[in-house]
Image 1: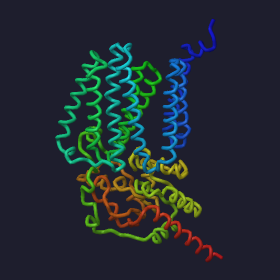
Image 2 (image 1 turned 90 degrees about the horizontal axis):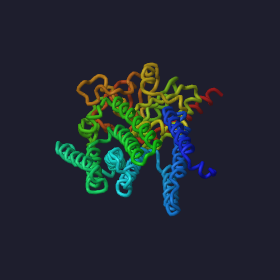
Image 3 (image 1 turned 120 degrees about the horizontal axis):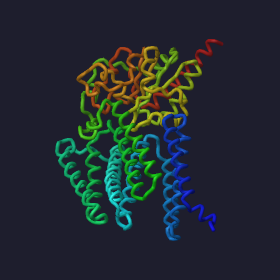
Amino acid sequence: MTTPMDFLHGPLVSEAIDLGAVLLLALGLKGLAKVSSARSANALAAAAMLLAVVGLLLQQQPEPAAWAWIAAGTGLGTVAGMVTARRVPMTAMPEVVALFNGCGGMASLLVAMGVALFDADAAGLVDRISIAVSVFVGAITFSGSLVAMAKLQGWLDTPAWTQSQLRHGVNLVLALLCLGGALLLPADPGGLPLWLLGIAATLLGIGVTLPIGGADMPVVISLLNSYSGVAAAAAGFVVGSRLLIVAGAMVGAAGLILTQVMCTAMNRSLVSVLFGGALGAGAHVGGGGDEAGYSRITSCSPEECAMALEQAERVVFVPGYGLAVAQAQHALRELSKLLEAHGVEVSYAIHPVAGRMPGHMNVLLAEADVPYEQLLEMDTINPEFPRTDVVIVLGANDVVNPQAKSDPSSPLFGMPVLEVDQARQVFVVKRSLGAGYAGIANALFELPQTAMVFGDAKAVINGLISELRALGVGRAKMAA
């Protein structure tokens, strides 16, 4: 006689849970394609993972002693996630994403090593190949993500030797050691080849990521995200989880597509990012590091900028990393509301690689409740610049440099940029004339319609708000 518990633990319920989780995950990933549905899509993906965990526990029926470890791990992860979500500032979000990628890689690595060391039943050729792939990709993802996080946080500089050809030799030796460990693994899955593969792959992740400079970090984070998906899919083969295979494949494919989008937006090939040196690795590589690189700079005060805004009918803001550093997104939203109240049409121009991770500016502005329809991608906003009265560039540099369109000798040549130089008037808010990651002077700064507003982005925006309110009060008094 079949009992309710037998039914719950039966294959029908397991298949239904797996199917439901896969569908929820697919809907979640699809929803992440739009800012307006991203929050609900994230909730769907989280529900899919919760359903998957419940299904696995019903299927595996852990021993009573194992429940304490499961509860401890669940509680620790929940607390860590909540603390991270509440306390980490938006400027540190790229570091958090890199760390999460690393945690995903480490999870796949530990699962594969645990099966190799303690599960004698994993003796099939497919199992051992899956273990090798999961260990290799998981270790590279883990160590590479930690290096990326440390470089973004400023804890780690790019060593000089990594900019020489020596690094290619070191990485080649490590890759050969990984290959040797992977080939020997099927003969001895729990022995020396496993440790050789794990250690060599960990060092290879460091060696590949260490030379990469800050300008290429959006590509690196996207690629590591893809790696974490591949590692998860391989771990799914190791433990026989179809859900993990599907989820990992989805994340891996999405990460690869995003990586290609980032490379296209930067006019860089993936090979040049990984093996061509660190773009922006040095502090200043070109002549744009100080005022000596410019001869026709015009600067103005927030008061003069506010007077131009008061006369404008259409204003476009171009957010960059300087906006994030200054934590000025809420002040910018207040300024936008003030302009909209005076009948000004406001929008935001979003470059794919503005900031330090894919979608950084979208997330930053969404935090300040900027309407989704005002966030315009590069291909949409570029044709609108000629009819724009005022553009305010907030901390962006290379993504608005017109040399990318006109100077074949520029390292940015061919990179798609925001064509703000087509607008009637441009104000660039920066602390100084320091160069961007490409290390070159920005031709935009010397155009006749461009004026520099030097200062912290938040302080400048607050100054604009005060000046605009004063101008508004003045008009009200004159009308009275």
